[in-house]
Length: 371
Image (tube, rainbow, N blue to C red):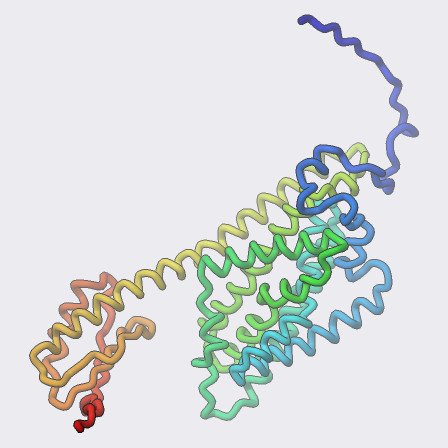
């Protein structure tokens, strides 16, 4: 069926355009239809409300800043204390009160609304907070006694080699946190989100490792923190965009096209940073998987190496840098280690040095008592 479409011409004057500070009263229906299940209209925070929560330089700035710095210092002290004493409960307490996610999510809001000043201010808060918590960790490490073995602490080792699953968890947490902040009815879940995303504890580990003279471990912990920051920014950018905040903050002016190009460049930069962060985390994950496979193979080779030694057994196989440690318990002398080294070289392409830890003795089990 043919249709005739008529057109009407209207005169557009500067006075007829929305003022740059005006916000549209109604969000586009396609936004509501697309996202109604996660951020329904009756629960959605306005842009002004979200800005007040995430921009430390809007509203009552004096109160916001004092609360931010006070809570950050305290959370840093608590996190470092929990790391050094290997107290999981203490570290969780630091996560709950840590305020560092506020300026990080503020970066995401600044990106989607095109507010460059908010992005810059939020970055300053994040960088300053990072330096402060790392300094707390360094000072704490310097006062530790020389005999302390804090670098082998599970709180440290668990945060110095992040993998791909850590990045996936950070993205999921970022989406959950952004959705919760966009809704008025999900404030109760924010403490759980604060626990799920690890921000201050890795920075405490960075400081402790630097203070203990282990920069390589510090880099691993900093990678975990950076990946969490990138995940939060990307997730918040996606959620805030789909929730309609860019439309609510739209500015109609001659430079609109240039502003769109700047936003696109920002998206490209964020994507590149995400790739850069993801590469070492994927590499760590692959390394862990391969080490697990090689551990099983080395243990089998060690058991065959000890097959002719009565009472000998392989207790454990672990990796330490470019060495594989084979713990053996045997009441008798061991065979030539070179034979085991040759076998491991055939199995593992990295050619690690085999170190055999020999414990003299044998396992004794209690025999069942007779009647």
